[in-house]
Length: 207
Length: 325
Image (cartoon, rainbow over all chains, first blue to last red; front, side, top):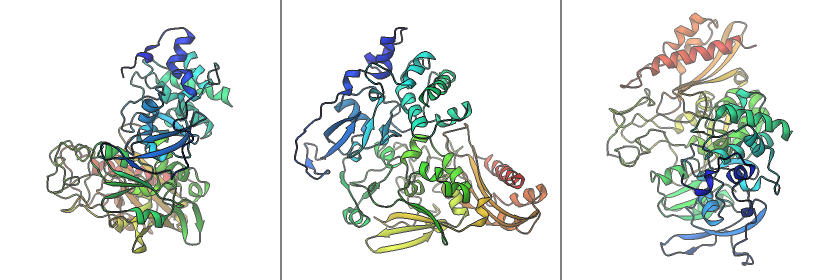
């Protein structure tokens, strides 16, 4: 948890936006290896350590990407290290904390337990893909308005999880239901009361 | 993670053909990727089966058919499942987190590995992970461990919530391998640890779960899954009960009961079922029947509360079901 850019905790909107969304510039992902022949999606070529790499063609935040990945690489590490989308956070890396939550084909999943090699043909959305230009997603805005965080490390995962809970799963009918349906996102600072406030408010705006 | 080769299959035949020695089939990955990172599992070859045509949730004369690649969240949300088999939907919704339920497949859920901390820690002895190395849980931190179906070699709890109502309802698992297809009752699909806790089921090498059938169970419309755990959400069971009751007036005509969190496999409670059948649905009947629930239990230092908690969990489920109209 030692990312320099994640320390923004001031009162200004700018630092909050950077904090919540990572760099907006990162949305425009340069497709790698475009123009490569339509080889079999799993075409493998051995590398130095004997592991054959896998070609992945997916859409990340609306942009097509073609990547060569180690078959062991998680979607989380691939987003962060290959695509420089560091808004998605590596918390437990064991599927227990929810910090790495992203959307795959519109559904919230854990990118730490998703192999990048399985992502061909999928649409991946990260926290960097939520805002419309300079306009924050209502859920991002609600987390700012309600101060739904302390250290903020879990926040991208909380926001991605909450957005899919509403858009993909029909939303929550009560605060208890918000708590239940957001239970896969752990907040070590225990900012839960304000997270619930933010999700409740954003749901009203999103509907 | 140890190196492995990777392939994506588009049909069952292709997946079976791609499977060689030491192959793992990858569906949701919520168990496999986790355990590969911990190097508890280190297959040489991984076959991604997510594009196999193994979906579908249908109800017909024979019962409820669920494709192995249906995701937990989709089965839990299915109107047919919710109406005719509510305890299946409840067990799914009380499992894991929303993200994990979106990922994990039904076939994978039935094959998920135990949460025993020693199994997951490669620096400690574990007969399930490394046969013959010993069981660290016998004299270790065993609060979450099993009290039924245990052996001197292993007391690891079966972790699945879903498998508990499925066992209660005599579910059948459909399997495919290069040798053909077969169907096995879920209750006998799971094996007891005995002296070989590394063997958990009758699945043969490179055999694939293609789906399950839950027989027509009119009594399952009145069913309930109750889960008791250390926190209210996103936690494995200390005890759980899957209970289906058919009542005629005040008399119990059919009872189907299984328990989770207490056994080395999902635990059907046929003695409790018999003690309920053709008796009035009263507290006295319930108390008498559940007195048999933990027959043969072998509690350890930290899980001695489980037999009593199991009996209370069952009474709660039975009482709630009786009061439901």
